[in-house]
Image (tube, rainbow, N blue to C red):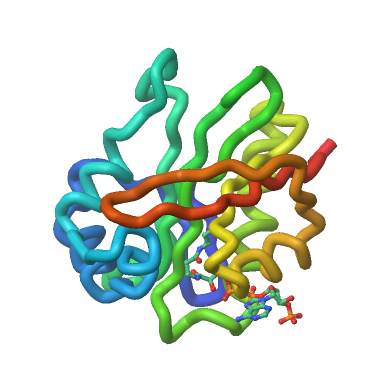
Length: 170
Ligand SMILES: CC(C)(COP(=O)(O)OP(=O)(O)OC[C@H]1O[C@@H](n2cnc3c(N)ncnc32)[C@H](O)[C@@H]1OP(=O)(O)O)[C@@H](O)C(=O)NCCC(=O)NCCS
């Protein structure tokens, strides 16, 4: 799937986009530091493309990128279908280059995610949001997500109280 969003394109990414994805993570190091305490663009690329929870297979994971006409990656999104239960899709990551945040792009990308997931049969979307990422909490709340439980997650040396949020899309 490729959708034109203004002057950008939302398209599926894969291993072959390694160079541009690694560049994206190197440029967007603040979120990696918040998550794990360090920025490791190559590791983050491998995680984005390959990491799957037990029981899921590669066909369950869809990685999208917002790219410009030169192929530069401006945002990444990953979706996991029917996880942890049928009908619920998990947004693993939605991350935009720092200089493009706060301009409505996240909201636009979310509209596309909803349309895509709905068409493929999803009934609700789920996201885990660190409590130490208050701007992101505001973002998801503004889109109608509600916290239904809180869990502790560890990435590298960092522990995060994490709000697990959900929104019905059907
Ligand atoms: C979180 C993120 C995806 C949001 O995308 P964005 O393009 O910056 O957000 P938008 O401009 O579309 O904002 C939509 C709404 O979210 C809320 N919001 C977004 N950024 C906010 C901020 N810094 N502070 C408070 N509210 C904010 C507002 O309600 C906003 O609506 P408004 O502009 O009408 O007030 C983006 O900022 C990002 O990539 N952050 C770093 C990575 C990250 O934290 N990802 C989420 C992990 S759970």
